[in-house]
Amino acid sequence: MRLSLVFAAASTAVVTSASVLPRAAAAASAPNLPASSFPTFKTISIDDAKNEKDLPPEWNRTHTVQADPDFFSAQTAASAACSANPNVRIEWKSYSTQHRKNFIGAIKCLMNKPPSGKFSPATNRYEDFVRLHQMYMPEVHQNAKFLVWHRYYLWVFQMTLRKECGFNDPFPWWDETLVAGKFGTTDMFTSPDYFGHLPGPQNGNPVCITSGAFAGLTCHIGPGGGSTPHCLSRAGQASLTSQCNANFVNTCNSRSSYADMESCSEYGPHAYGHNGIGGVMSDVAASPSDPIFWMHHSFVDHSFRIWQNAAASRTTTINGKDHEGNPLTLDTTISVGGIFPDVKVRDVLNTMSGATIGGYPWCYRYNY
Image (cartoon, rainbow, N blue to C red; front, side, top):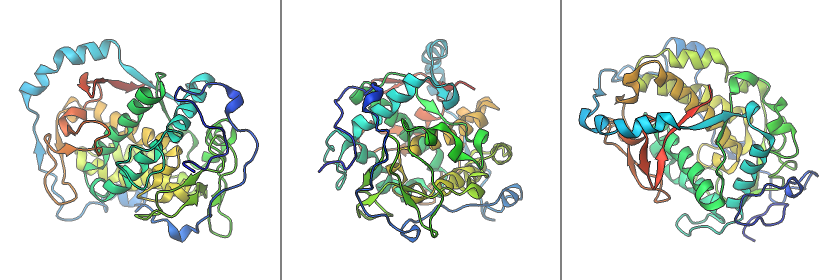
């Protein structure tokens, strides 16, 4: 069985009818794994972030690659066109009910498509993205490539929803600072139409999700680098999600260099959001198995973009090192396993550049 979900197979078009979104609780159809099965995210406290204890003594703060002026001047016309008509990501509270249902329906559409065959053991097209993340995890975590790679990964997911499932609505984003410490109260989790509930841990372990649009989902990728079927589970902890607050985001964004800011963001609000939702979301390698992953990473990318907005040079320069200790440059390659073309850091650093990637404009901003 390609996908263990308690709903009928969707067509290749975006599902928009509320009648197909499951409302009744569904029994979990795969084993619930204990918390110890999931390799969680490394975190730092806000006090340590303020004291820059996440930065090693040998941290190279001086390596900054200056932009190629010819490249960026060539993008002037495209950028101007982009600025006149950008794609705008809409925060969830302002996202219409119909857009919400279309977004959920598009994710389910991918889950009901066959896998490409390039990301074994993925059992459906959605799991191609989970396996991709699992494969690339060592390369794109705990180093400066983290933010730029996940920016492209999130956009590629959006374009795939558009290309393969007809999702042409604005993409949503989630301002987690509005509900820091009380994630479970947002209708993303409380409504039967969306992502399912956010239970607390039971006896220290996560709980299978049996409500919402993804009730009874079986995850075939993970935990960690493995492929043991398990239920979509969560274990919400307010003490952790409380760290996804404006003060922590602002602390990270007060750092002047990209690499310094990236470190704080990755080990700060980003990590606490994952661990605070818990269960599958706390799995460093296979966390995209939980569809709430995309909402959380829209928050992370939004924070990155806000940091960039503070200085024009932040969309044209980069610093830090990759997972092998090589300097991160504008020509460092970002790959998503062939789902979309490989790009360079320079191609995705400015979300408003207007460049064309895979036939689609790289052109978006946030509604605030």
